[in-house]
Each structure stands twice: as structure tokens, then as C-alpha cells.
Length: 132
Image (cartoon, rainbow, N blue to C red; front, side):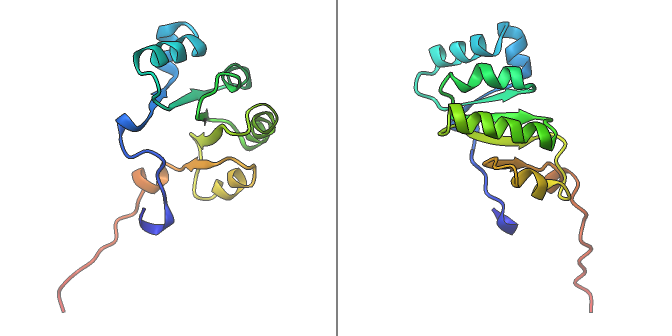
């Protein structure tokens, strides 16, 4: 929360995150979602999608959050329009490939969250000395 950043999950128990490897193991994004809901009823679900087709599958499933993985800005705009039409209560998060330079472009699309990995994995160290 330093520097104005806010997280939407504090830990793994706050929500189930269904990623591409879970989808591959289950056979489809909806099958993975069904398995999670059967194992943990009532747990909020966040689902990663990597195409507009997967987005369409998930929009009608009543998930709390959809993570748009490596969507370019133009595709993110389409995703926001589809969400607004079909599932306006569902939150969208852009992730993968975002930089501090591109964050404003993604934010302008109307997504709810931005995941900018550069905030943590590309931080430049500040050389602080205590000598006088």
C-alpha cells in the first residue's frame, strides 16, 4: 500500500485464482471453475483468461474477477465493453506485459485493476548512506 498501490487480495485464502495450468488440467475454464466451486463453496473466484473466447465463456459464470492475461490495450477495450454489457458486477484486472509507461493506457479502458509487475520485480535500489 506504499506509494498509492492497493491490493485486492491479502493471501491465498481470500479467493481462488484459476490460472492456465488449472484450465489445462480440468479440460476447460468452466470445468476448472466448477471444480473450485465444488471444493470451496462460497469462496470468491478469480479466473485468468488469455483470449476473448475464454472471456465470453467466463462472463456468464458469475465470477467476481476476471484476469485479462497479456491482452493488448485494444483487446482490453473490447473485454471491458463485453463485461459492461453482460456482467457489469464482474471486476476486470489487466495483467502481463503492463509497464509503468503503459499503465495509463490500460487504466483508460475502464478495467478495475492493473497488475504492474515492474513495481516489485524491477525496482531500482536507492543507495542510502548513513555516513556524514
